[in-house]
Image 1 (tube, helix red, strand yellow):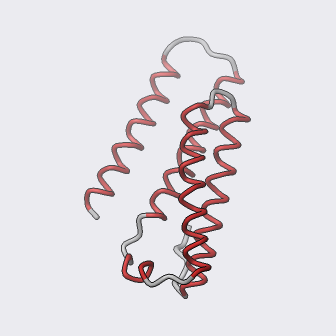
Image 2 (tube, one colour):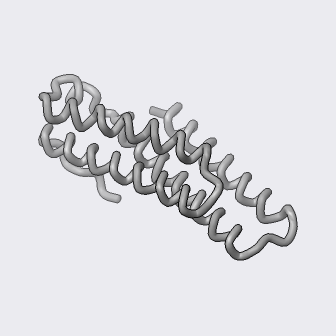
Length: 123
C-alpha cells in the first residue's frame, strides 16, 4: 500500500512540475491556460479512477458476482481509455473527454461497490 501512495505522489508531483514548466516558458494565451487547467483536472480524475481500481479489500473483489465483475471490467476499460486520451490530448475539449471517461469509470466502480455491499468512499 505504501508503494501505491508513493507512486501516486510521484505522478502528482510530475504533473505539477509539468504545469510549472509550461507556465514559465513564456507568454501564453488565456486559452492555453485553460488547456493547462483542463489537463490538471483530467489527470486528477484519471488518478482517482486508478486508485479506485487498486483497492485494499481485494478479498471482497475476488468473490464478486457477475454484476460486480462486469462493472469492474468496464471501469478498467474506462481507465485505459481515459489514460490514452489524456496522453494524446492537447485542447481543453480533449481533456474534458478524458475527464468524462474517467468519471464514467468511477460510476462503474460505484456500481461494483453497490453490488458487493461495500460502502462508497467519500470524495
